[in-house]
Image 1 (cartoon, rainbow, N blue to C red):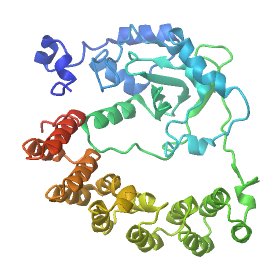
Image 2 (cartoon, rainbow, N blue to C red):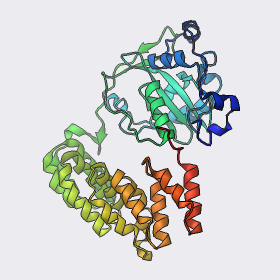
Image 3 (cartoon, rainbow, N blue to C red):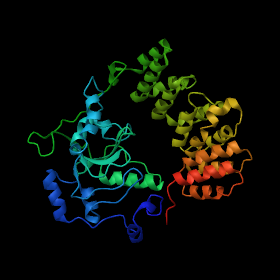
Image 4 (cartoon, one colour):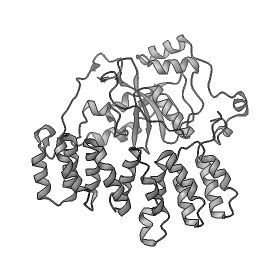
Amino acid sequence: MLSSPLGRTLPDEIIGSGWLGFDPASDLDIAEVEIRLKIALPPSYREFLKVSNGWRRTTHAIERVWGTHEICWFRKKHRDWIDAYVAPASFGPTDEIPDDEYYAYESKVECFHPSHLKETLQISDVGDAAVYLLNPQIITKDGELEAWFFANWLPGAHRYRSFLEMMIAEYHQFAGIEWKQPTGIIGGLPDEYIGSPGSAKRHVRKKRRLEPKVLGRYLREWTVDELVEMLRQTDFPPFRQEIADVLGKLGDPRAVEHLMDMLKEGSNASVHAMYAIKRLAPERLREPLLQMLRERHFSGFHAAANLLAEMGDDRAVPILVEVLKDLRPEAKHEAEFVGGDIALFRQAGFDALVELLKNEQSLVRLRAIHGLYGTRHPDVRSVFEKLLNDPDPVIREQAAVALEILPPRRNN
């Protein structure tokens, strides 16, 4: 942070000290805030405060983490913000997410219970329409409160199991280091509370393991044979998409052949079939996905590239490179964006994009640069720094823009 453009905006004495923190909080400081709020602070946050009672800046979005004397209920200062989220959720039916899914943190990371917002603790300044919150309505078995990075532009909240996990994620994002948020249920489901902290009526809500309904019935009520028959009877793409999703969730391997046939369709149903096959028989998917890339399958091209990257199949990279180099007008749809797909292939993708910078065609080189924007390779800044001396002024301009966007070089 101190060596980044943001760090240069800090006072000289802070830059000179090499420390963005403050004096540590005492046990008395922490005890006083817990008495004031009528709730115990979570272990990872307490440990942070004992090292530094607040922090000057964490990312572009958050300018300062608060000290113990500033922590307060989010509703005290931002009632209008809460109302903007809670009021719409109070109208009409809502899709209940089973606890096993909601607390696995595997998908829908911006999904959150709006009713919890008014009970959250604000622990930072509001930066770029964003703020750090702790949610005392969700408490793990080891006392951690769910932590939120809450922002209007997400929209909603990116949820973490703890303050520690949120800070790890924020650091890696700012530093441009790849990090995947831990997923799955760890240590059992947390307790979800109803009622405000300190309220006599506060109690633990009964665990909600709802079985979702799909196509009007519970998942367990469907059979592969029924769903396959429905596929034969409808050509409506949204309906076929949902059938593919259900076939994948059922976990019955008999569905694989029917899903493989769906890959040949020229609609989004084929994309849903891809993900269903990945659940059931991922190895069966590799060759068909590579073929979809070779044929430049209109609806499934980028999804196929993403899945092959997830599976670490670098055979896709040369195919994608040829697409990027294709300068024909009819190839523009895939070629303009394929650099981002190549970047997903980690080292193989990075090497391929760097090699494309040697191409004699300016448009090919620009596409490669746009792909390199999306890599988190430790050498990517060095690549752009060299391009500042490129004879092509457009390339030099793009390199300068990239260096402004990318996080600063880390000192080892």
